[in-house]
Length: 427
Image (cartoon, rainbow, N blue to C red):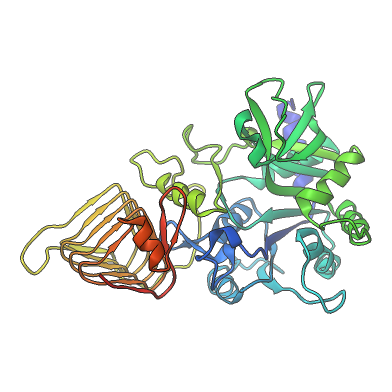
């Protein structure tokens, strides 16, 4: 453990380093279909007016990074537009930017074959900036994290690469990339295994394991050498977690950073180490449920570490009586700007911008994206409605699973119905 003088010295050392941020935003997001049918996974709306990529970019900006590139690939138009319209580094900082960089085919007529290959094909960006340290993060997780603290720990450890880890129950080890350490050297990775069924618990918490968060800090030259080596391997899947990190582990050069050590300003005991991979419809739905309780598991209202997004030019949400004077109700829900709720019942739901819910309609345990219209007397339960969906008067979504499937809607095993963009749902 560092004493206060050592902490000050390492903080000063970090400030003398040039830090470059890379956000990997090129994944297809097949498990989130149909929400990713027409957009990249990091561009999927979340929590009202946010996009998934906003969490990664907010964490980097709040941590003091001012040079960040977003590597895109699949169906990136809405993502590129969101980054260009929303993310501007202000304050007059010289050479500060957040830039969306599409796949450039710099190594031949081919697209990215994996996250490591994305960095290999984008080494020109690193060569141009000449940073001392590169921070590489995913674009599809919901969490808060002060990366400056992880960078300080990385510098102090002397490791060439450091992997951010979150503690998870050992019973869930087969769902994650699991980091194993020795009790004698708890900050160094002994082994990195993908979804093991025989995971070993941590020395200080045998019921827990370290799960990789998909966030990494690298010494620049070490990262460059690693992706170049990987690019020459015919047997590699060219993945950061599956290939690059195990390469560092085999060389004894990989460290681990426990998210539990990360002290984010404004966080509470309830949400201080929250992290959610929203790669499936079920996890996406559950993450929204984490937002809406009176004491949320993840608090969007932390003003000391805000989650930034596009500032909508929209009026406030409005709740009004319907034409017959009936009052609507809204319980444990998030309602975005521009929404009009007229004599309807909203419960445990999240409404995106400009949603319109009419007289007698019910929206319960649901997620509604931008500009959705739910007409009088319609019912929506345990459902996700993509942008511009119209639910006609008296129509039902999420009530009868087999009927929803027969109408071409996606229904998960747990019973969540997903209606794709622009669909009109008839009675």
